[in-house]
Image (spheres, rainbow, N blue to C red):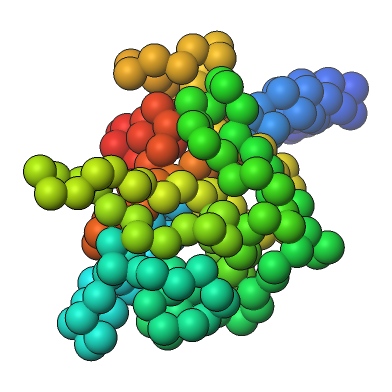
Length: 211
């Protein structure tokens, strides 16, 4: 007689059960890591796109954020005119009916956050990214010996109305220069002036410049 060696049904079921338990424990972490990487990539893309828009506007119309003098939507020499002229804006909101601004918290390190949805212009781009900033934003300049600082501030939401709609924050709610963000989220405080768009919190800086 030839003996045949194999697994019993009980052994197979036990093995599958162990695999299921391990998968259930690791999948959430893996999904969060993947999603965090997507948010980080979209955030970097948004900063780059905004910076390129104002650079292009300087080349074509010879003015940047520092030269803006109007707060009327899409009027000449306004922040909205720069962005809608040089980027693919699919929708602009002046109220918070369809979109509620996520206000940066103390843990995020954001300062002078946009006040309310109704006080902001909110631009939706074709790639799903949202940029929201106070309607009063104009003359956004980092000063020198002849001009005072007037740095404008806003937020980038890398996936618009989709969740989790959480402002990025340092791990352990530690808003310090050595901030670490292990799980990036989708809302980032930013500041803009002259031809520059930069992070406006330690957490947002950690995501941009971290490995």
